[in-house]
Image 1 (tube, rainbow, N blue to C red):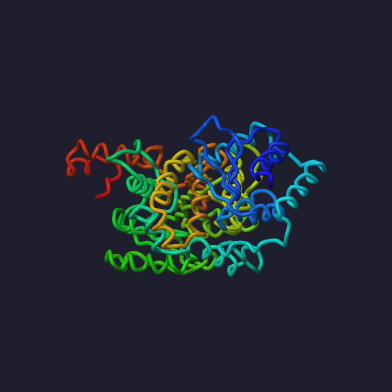
Image 2: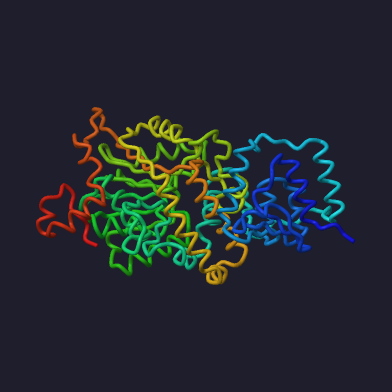
Length: 462
């Protein structure tokens, strides 16, 4: 009688890890192994021996990711909880430094042969990125952006808030019936506009403008004229249609254009919201210098950008094998200090740095809930493979921000004039503008006509 598969796998894994498994395992023969003291613990389900074969050919994160995306490995229960348990185990036992011994490798090979796992490498799932050409050439950057952002406008409408803001929100209250994701994204857009000191008649450039959420908000509520650039054809098409429907075509222009190709005269303000991660390490000085060149003297620049390495070594600047192959190919995240060095070397003066790390946990979780609670709709829009990519992506991102392995910051800068003057107000409050939460509270108490006369910066009409 064949030996059950799951206990054999559990014995090998615990031998290599030097610790008990944090979740149960169920194999394709129906056998189970692992802890039984927590009935709510996630269960890792190996549906096919091909998933193990992937691990033989690509040990570690890439093999596991391919097996999960292909549906050969699954998780019953909360995926984020399962990832958290494995990450806690890795930290407690310093598994990053674990290297299987010769005996461990021999035991793994013998088990693979016994289970019928040995064979040629399975083809990667079709959703895995396959880019060609030199790193961060304009063609390759366009392909990398298209891989993620041209997935489906309908899918992003399904996942995001009505403003289509695909970046960290600014949560000025606890989530509840009167305050949710759409409010936090609105408050983030307000925060950006106020830090930029936007006023009617100013010209704003948004580099990596997404689906035009900031462009629309700035034009509607702050009276600016704005230019947005993106490498995503679907984003551009969606944004142009949205701007036209709102009657803002005379105020907002959206281009399918590489940031390196922008040649306009100086803008009064520039924003770049979670786009700097995509320009690469070697190319970041080019990005910073171009932003400096496009900004007029005394103009303000606001970057919102993810960082990596806050709680330890920056061992995975691309986010790890899964992120690099399935979500954001060619992305590079560095510690905050390294980014500030690049920006200062380009001639920009750093005025304010604002961490929003925990705000990203509160932002990602609603996205993950939408995905998990509406699986059938998500699969209809993008297919089973992409659903699984996004499930793993959002669960992992939420955990990375929660555990301080990734961060996100708003960095406010100014281009000083030739005489060294910044042109900034003396008061920090006047530089940064009233916080959206405080401004809204004041508007709730003071009649609108009085409040608009008293506020340093008008409260935008909702």
